[in-house]
Image (cartoon, rainbow, N blue to C red; front, side):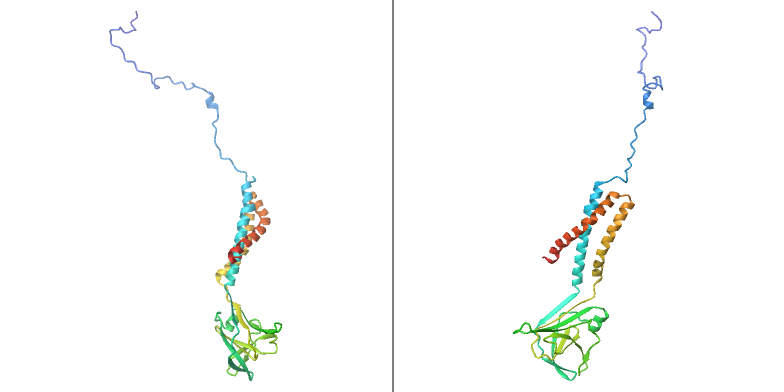
Length: 276
Protein backbone atom coordinates (compact mmCIF):
# COMPACT_ATOMS: atom_id res chain seq x y z
CA UNK A 1 0.00 0.00 0.00
CA UNK A 2 1.32 3.40 -0.96
CA UNK A 3 1.02 6.63 0.98
CA UNK A 4 -0.45 8.50 -1.96
CA UNK A 5 -3.84 7.06 -1.34
CA UNK A 6 -5.84 8.47 1.56
CA UNK A 7 -6.91 6.02 4.20
CA UNK A 8 -10.51 5.17 4.26
CA UNK A 9 -10.87 6.61 7.69
CA UNK A 10 -9.37 9.97 6.92
CA UNK A 11 -11.15 13.04 5.46
CA UNK A 12 -11.98 12.74 1.79
CA UNK A 13 -11.08 15.49 -0.63
CA UNK A 14 -14.06 17.01 -2.46
CA UNK A 15 -13.84 16.40 -6.15
CA UNK A 16 -15.24 18.97 -8.61
CA UNK A 17 -16.19 18.23 -12.22
CA UNK A 18 -13.73 19.51 -14.74
CA UNK A 19 -14.97 22.73 -16.31
CA UNK A 20 -14.22 24.26 -19.69
CA UNK A 21 -11.78 26.61 -17.97
CA UNK A 22 -9.76 23.75 -16.60
CA UNK A 23 -9.97 21.78 -19.85
CA UNK A 24 -6.85 21.93 -21.92
CA UNK A 25 -7.27 24.28 -24.89
CA UNK A 26 -6.34 22.86 -28.24
CA UNK A 27 -6.64 25.45 -30.97
CA UNK A 28 -6.02 22.91 -33.67
CA UNK A 29 -8.66 20.44 -32.54
CA UNK A 30 -11.70 19.72 -34.62
CA UNK A 31 -12.26 19.53 -38.33
CA UNK A 32 -9.65 21.70 -40.01
CA UNK A 33 -11.59 21.56 -43.28
CA UNK A 34 -14.27 23.83 -41.81
CA UNK A 35 -11.83 26.72 -41.91
CA UNK A 36 -11.11 26.25 -45.57
CA UNK A 37 -14.73 25.93 -46.79
CA UNK A 38 -16.00 29.32 -48.13
CA UNK A 39 -19.33 30.50 -46.71
CA UNK A 40 -22.20 30.87 -49.15
CA UNK A 41 -23.23 34.53 -49.68
CA UNK A 42 -26.72 35.45 -51.04
CA UNK A 43 -26.09 38.20 -53.60
CA UNK A 44 -29.07 39.95 -55.26
CA UNK A 45 -29.54 38.76 -58.78
CA UNK A 46 -29.01 41.51 -61.37
CA UNK A 47 -31.94 41.77 -63.79
CA UNK A 48 -31.15 41.92 -67.45
CA UNK A 49 -32.76 45.10 -68.86
CA UNK A 50 -32.85 43.52 -72.30
CA UNK A 51 -34.84 40.52 -71.10
CA UNK A 52 -38.19 40.20 -72.89
CA UNK A 53 -41.08 40.41 -70.41
CA UNK A 54 -44.38 39.08 -71.69
CA UNK A 55 -46.39 40.94 -69.02
CA UNK A 56 -44.99 44.33 -70.07
CA UNK A 57 -45.51 43.49 -73.73
CA UNK A 58 -49.20 42.61 -73.18
CA UNK A 59 -49.76 45.78 -71.14
CA UNK A 60 -48.38 47.88 -74.00
CA UNK A 61 -50.13 45.87 -76.70
CA UNK A 62 -53.62 45.60 -75.21
CA UNK A 63 -54.25 47.39 -71.93
CA UNK A 64 -52.80 50.85 -72.61
CA UNK A 65 -54.23 51.20 -76.18
CA UNK A 66 -57.70 50.20 -74.98
CA UNK A 67 -57.63 52.67 -72.08
CA UNK A 68 -56.23 55.47 -74.27
CA UNK A 69 -58.77 54.94 -77.07
CA UNK A 70 -61.67 54.71 -74.61
CA UNK A 71 -60.63 57.96 -72.92
CA UNK A 72 -60.23 59.64 -76.29
CA UNK A 73 -63.69 58.54 -77.42
CA UNK A 74 -65.27 59.60 -74.14
CA UNK A 75 -63.64 63.05 -74.14
CA UNK A 76 -64.45 63.54 -77.84
CA UNK A 77 -68.15 62.85 -77.32
CA UNK A 78 -68.20 64.95 -74.15
CA UNK A 79 -66.70 67.91 -76.01
CA UNK A 80 -69.28 67.52 -78.78
CA UNK A 81 -72.10 67.63 -76.25
CA UNK A 82 -70.47 70.62 -74.53
CA UNK A 83 -70.35 72.45 -77.85
CA UNK A 84 -73.99 71.66 -78.51
CA UNK A 85 -74.89 73.34 -75.21
CA UNK A 86 -73.96 76.67 -76.81
CA UNK A 87 -76.34 76.13 -79.73
CA UNK A 88 -79.89 77.45 -79.62
CA UNK A 89 -82.92 77.06 -81.86
CA UNK A 90 -86.48 78.30 -81.69
CA UNK A 91 -89.36 78.25 -84.16
CA UNK A 92 -92.94 79.57 -84.34
CA UNK A 93 -95.74 78.23 -86.54
CA UNK A 94 -98.12 80.53 -88.46
CA UNK A 95 -97.16 83.88 -86.93
CA UNK A 96 -99.63 86.76 -87.06
CA UNK A 97 -98.58 89.75 -89.16
CA UNK A 98 -100.94 92.23 -87.56
CA UNK A 99 -98.63 95.24 -87.29
CA UNK A 100 -97.69 97.94 -89.77
CA UNK A 101 -94.48 99.78 -90.67
CA UNK A 102 -93.46 102.02 -93.56
CA UNK A 103 -90.14 101.28 -95.27
CA UNK A 104 -89.00 103.12 -98.39
CA UNK A 105 -92.43 104.75 -98.67
CA UNK A 106 -94.12 101.34 -98.76
CA UNK A 107 -96.36 99.80 -96.12
CA UNK A 108 -95.36 96.41 -94.72
CA UNK A 109 -97.21 94.05 -92.41
CA UNK A 110 -95.20 93.15 -89.30
CA UNK A 111 -95.10 90.26 -86.82
CA UNK A 112 -93.46 90.81 -83.43
CA UNK A 113 -92.31 87.47 -82.03
CA UNK A 114 -90.60 86.46 -78.81
CA UNK A 115 -87.97 83.70 -78.97
CA UNK A 116 -86.28 81.94 -76.09
CA UNK A 117 -82.80 82.83 -77.34
CA UNK A 118 -79.82 84.82 -75.98
CA UNK A 119 -80.45 88.55 -75.91
CA UNK A 120 -77.28 89.50 -77.80
CA UNK A 121 -77.66 92.35 -80.23
CA UNK A 122 -76.56 91.87 -83.81
CA UNK A 123 -73.61 94.17 -83.13
CA UNK A 124 -72.44 91.92 -80.26
CA UNK A 125 -72.93 88.81 -82.37
CA UNK A 126 -70.78 90.30 -85.11
CA UNK A 127 -68.07 91.59 -82.72
CA UNK A 128 -67.76 88.30 -80.81
CA UNK A 129 -67.89 86.23 -84.00
CA UNK A 130 -70.99 84.30 -82.93
CA UNK A 131 -73.31 82.64 -85.41
CA UNK A 132 -76.87 83.84 -86.07
CA UNK A 133 -79.44 82.72 -88.61
CA UNK A 134 -83.14 83.33 -89.15
CA UNK A 135 -85.52 82.07 -91.83
CA UNK A 136 -89.10 82.41 -93.06
CA UNK A 137 -90.91 79.51 -94.77
CA UNK A 138 -94.07 79.33 -96.83
CA UNK A 139 -95.88 76.19 -98.03
CA UNK A 140 -98.84 76.28 -100.41
CA UNK A 141 -101.36 73.85 -98.89
CA UNK A 142 -102.97 73.23 -102.29
CA UNK A 143 -99.73 72.92 -104.24
CA UNK A 144 -96.71 71.63 -102.29
CA UNK A 145 -94.43 72.49 -105.17
CA UNK A 146 -95.24 76.15 -104.60
CA UNK A 147 -92.69 76.51 -101.86
CA UNK A 148 -90.70 79.58 -100.89
CA UNK A 149 -88.53 80.96 -98.18
CA UNK A 150 -86.28 83.77 -97.01
CA UNK A 151 -83.20 83.76 -94.81
CA UNK A 152 -80.55 85.97 -93.24
CA UNK A 153 -77.32 85.07 -91.45
CA UNK A 154 -74.71 87.20 -89.74
CA UNK A 155 -72.16 86.48 -92.47
CA UNK A 156 -74.43 88.00 -95.15
CA UNK A 157 -73.86 91.74 -95.20
CA UNK A 158 -74.31 92.77 -91.58
CA UNK A 159 -73.84 96.40 -92.64
CA UNK A 160 -76.56 96.23 -95.30
CA UNK A 161 -79.79 97.62 -93.86
CA UNK A 162 -82.63 100.04 -94.54
CA UNK A 163 -84.30 102.59 -92.30
CA UNK A 164 -88.02 103.04 -91.66
CA UNK A 165 -89.79 106.36 -91.32
CA UNK A 166 -89.56 105.97 -87.54
CA UNK A 167 -85.76 105.74 -87.77
CA UNK A 168 -85.55 102.00 -87.04
CA UNK A 169 -82.99 99.76 -88.78
CA UNK A 170 -84.29 96.79 -90.76
CA UNK A 171 -82.20 94.07 -92.36
CA UNK A 172 -83.34 92.74 -95.78
CA UNK A 173 -83.63 88.96 -96.14
CA UNK A 174 -82.68 86.83 -99.15
CA UNK A 175 -85.72 85.15 -100.69
CA UNK A 176 -86.25 82.33 -103.18
CA UNK A 177 -89.04 80.24 -104.68
CA UNK A 178 -92.55 81.60 -104.38
CA UNK A 179 -91.29 84.42 -102.11
CA UNK A 180 -88.60 85.61 -104.50
CA UNK A 181 -90.62 88.56 -105.79
CA UNK A 182 -91.53 89.83 -102.30
CA UNK A 183 -89.63 91.83 -99.73
CA UNK A 184 -88.89 90.60 -96.22
CA UNK A 185 -87.13 92.53 -93.46
CA UNK A 186 -86.36 91.83 -89.83
CA UNK A 187 -84.90 93.49 -86.74
CA UNK A 188 -83.66 92.09 -83.44
CA UNK A 189 -84.25 93.71 -80.06
CA UNK A 190 -82.96 91.36 -77.36
CA UNK A 191 -85.11 88.24 -77.52
CA UNK A 192 -87.80 89.90 -79.63
CA UNK A 193 -87.67 89.51 -83.39
CA UNK A 194 -89.86 91.63 -85.66
CA UNK A 195 -90.47 90.67 -89.30
CA UNK A 196 -91.91 92.88 -92.00
CA UNK A 197 -93.19 91.85 -95.46
CA UNK A 198 -95.41 92.88 -98.34
CA UNK A 199 -96.42 89.24 -98.84
CA UNK A 200 -100.19 88.98 -98.39
CA UNK A 201 -100.58 85.26 -97.53
CA UNK A 202 -100.07 83.35 -94.31
CA UNK A 203 -96.45 82.54 -93.46
CA UNK A 204 -96.16 78.98 -92.17
CA UNK A 205 -92.99 79.02 -90.11
CA UNK A 206 -90.32 81.39 -88.78
CA UNK A 207 -87.21 80.16 -86.99
CA UNK A 208 -84.07 81.51 -85.34
CA UNK A 209 -80.89 79.61 -84.51
CA UNK A 210 -77.25 80.34 -83.64
CA UNK A 211 -74.55 79.73 -81.09
CA UNK A 212 -72.89 81.46 -78.19
CA UNK A 213 -69.31 81.60 -76.98
CA UNK A 214 -67.76 78.30 -75.88
CA UNK A 215 -67.02 77.96 -72.17
CA UNK A 216 -63.51 77.31 -70.84
CA UNK A 217 -64.39 73.72 -70.00
CA UNK A 218 -65.63 73.12 -73.55
CA UNK A 219 -62.40 74.48 -75.00
CA UNK A 220 -60.35 72.26 -72.67
CA UNK A 221 -62.37 69.17 -73.57
CA UNK A 222 -61.90 69.92 -77.26
CA UNK A 223 -58.14 70.20 -76.77
CA UNK A 224 -57.55 67.06 -74.66
CA UNK A 225 -58.17 64.49 -77.47
CA UNK A 226 -55.14 65.90 -79.29
CA UNK A 227 -52.98 65.39 -76.19
CA UNK A 228 -53.69 61.66 -75.84
CA UNK A 229 -51.83 60.61 -79.06
CA UNK A 230 -48.92 62.88 -78.05
CA UNK A 231 -48.79 61.23 -74.62
CA UNK A 232 -48.90 57.79 -76.27
CA UNK A 233 -45.92 58.60 -78.49
CA UNK A 234 -44.05 60.06 -75.52
CA UNK A 235 -44.65 56.80 -73.61
CA UNK A 236 -43.16 54.79 -76.46
CA UNK A 237 -40.02 56.96 -76.45
CA UNK A 238 -39.80 56.74 -72.65
CA UNK A 239 -40.05 52.94 -72.78
CA UNK A 240 -37.03 52.57 -75.04
CA UNK A 241 -35.01 55.27 -73.25
CA UNK A 242 -35.52 53.53 -69.89
CA UNK A 243 -34.71 50.12 -71.48
CA UNK A 244 -38.26 48.83 -71.05
CA UNK A 245 -38.17 47.41 -74.54
CA UNK A 246 -40.90 44.86 -73.90
CA UNK A 247 -43.34 47.66 -73.09
CA UNK A 248 -42.11 49.73 -76.01
CA UNK A 249 -42.62 46.95 -78.56
CA UNK A 250 -46.07 46.34 -77.09
CA UNK A 251 -46.99 50.00 -77.49
CA UNK A 252 -45.80 49.94 -81.09
CA UNK A 253 -48.07 46.99 -81.75
CA UNK A 254 -50.88 48.76 -79.91
CA UNK A 255 -50.93 51.44 -82.64
CA UNK A 256 -52.72 48.86 -84.80
CA UNK A 257 -55.19 47.92 -82.05
CA UNK A 258 -55.98 51.49 -80.92
CA UNK A 259 -58.11 52.53 -83.99
CA UNK A 260 -60.31 49.43 -83.68
CA UNK A 261 -60.69 50.01 -79.95
CA UNK A 262 -61.58 53.66 -80.60
CA UNK A 263 -64.33 52.68 -83.04
CA UNK A 264 -65.84 50.15 -80.63
CA UNK A 265 -65.63 52.71 -77.80
CA UNK A 266 -67.43 55.32 -79.92
CA UNK A 267 -70.22 52.86 -80.72
CA UNK A 268 -70.56 51.78 -77.09
CA UNK A 269 -70.52 55.34 -75.70
CA UNK A 270 -72.99 56.54 -78.35
CA UNK A 271 -75.60 54.24 -76.83
CA UNK A 272 -74.94 55.83 -73.44
CA UNK A 273 -74.82 59.47 -74.58
CA UNK A 274 -77.70 59.50 -77.00
CA UNK A 275 -79.56 56.34 -75.92
CA UNK A 276 -79.66 55.07 -79.47
